[in-house]
Image (cartoon, rainbow, N blue to C red; front, side):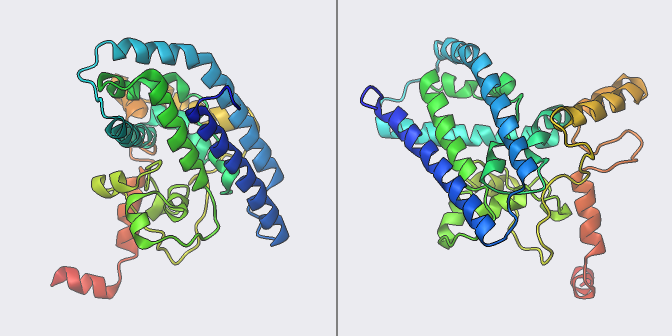
Length: 307
């Protein structure tokens, strides 16, 4: 440990804390018979995590080179160390929100992101159920940071810190937090909504560390339904084997592109949100949410609207 700098030590401490919390949650879930964990699901999470680690190692050098080359064209330099790190973490978190939003509203990116949402369980290991192919394109979302004068090493470190925070909110345990905290930061309650397949909860709360982006851009939702949270996808794959869990959405996407009439519709399947179809045979989350609101409007609500 003596050869490590303070940033490396902090990262190791945080990762160690996450491992300990995962083991504690796993033990409590078993002891209290909550069934938050299921053996096959946990093994799938470990499998996807391992693949993501390999992917990150493969692209690590290229990511560093791309960010370093972009840094040469930085527009300005922040010299105050406190302002430097504050802005780096905040802007990096916003750019992650943009990346995450893209993963939900562009089907091509959803085909890669969907693995993270394919579990019907929600626990600390779900946070490790990684978007395996994300490292191949994530760097391009972070290029503005290099142009702002942040070094490649610092960008990667800031991402690691916010990623570790993001893992900590993957829990079903109700953690008492002050109200002000939930106005600024992502909480487990916020992230339970994000992983839910209940129609009103779809595509909500996409922040990693800060929830303010969702509040600002209209993707925020409280955990406020009377019905219990149902985790997973609206249409869960029957085959959750190691290959299909990675490629089931790719298969469906390629099938739709192949059978779509005309180039415009083929591109539409790639770029439009999941659920979009050229003939209206399937629905996007926003369409389903509008229909849900119409179906669940009360007579009192109707009277208010008509008044």
